[in-house]
Length: 346
Image (tube, one colour):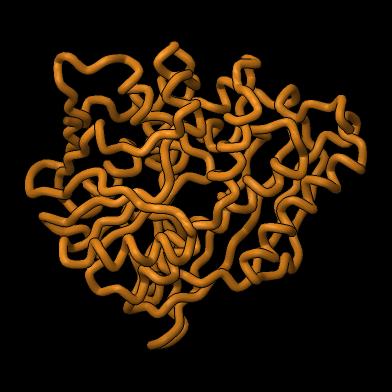
């Protein structure tokens, strides 16, 4: 098992293998219109993290699916990261996870059963930590390793947090530092040391469980998780859904130290370039902005943090909840503002 490197079997890794936003928009533009029943509270309209279907006045189902190819070589860590990332979409909607289904695609002629078993064990360990069962799933024999979950949760319909609820003047808070995609690029190039890898695993396996607490806070107006489209891409989804602009400060963005060193040396993912090509025209950066700064805000985060838009008077409550639920500090990174749906980077 120690001789098998999972990343050698995949052309991309983690959320960095997501289809670029511009390409995805073109694909969805050709999809036929489907049914939109009145109880479907959240569908595809605002690029939200999960679908939400109302069962009654007090209960709604949150449903999502997320899977990807290996971002690390260790099978147990891969399973943990993929499961944490999948459940994040439930938390981002303010939901409480109730169960999961496993999505498993493995090249059976290349990976021994012991390796595949460790991937499944990693995913199961995260679900146990979240207090939910893996109640089933589906598996196929494919060319590249793929693992993830269907995540199901519940939420009060009146407390759903979407991309479309942000308000002018809302403060933006990020719960995890940026840089996971950069670290993954460093790992593939053999440039990531043990300390950097430990930081990568620390953040990508931290459940965004604070999302459940955010649901009950009236002053929290919008939430999304920062994943494959990078901070800029997911914040622009909030801007478009809420019909507002946003400003973030580069100096306020939390960044994993090892990632900052790597990106300053030119290490980044191809997905970062694709992200910028997809939405760069909606980002306003100063004339003196450096390439590494652009790479940072477009860096694809695998199992990234929650990006929260809340009223100024709710900031302390949100920061306290992050500290209590996740044992780490959130960071104020910017503000929502009236105007065209663009992102200004100061």
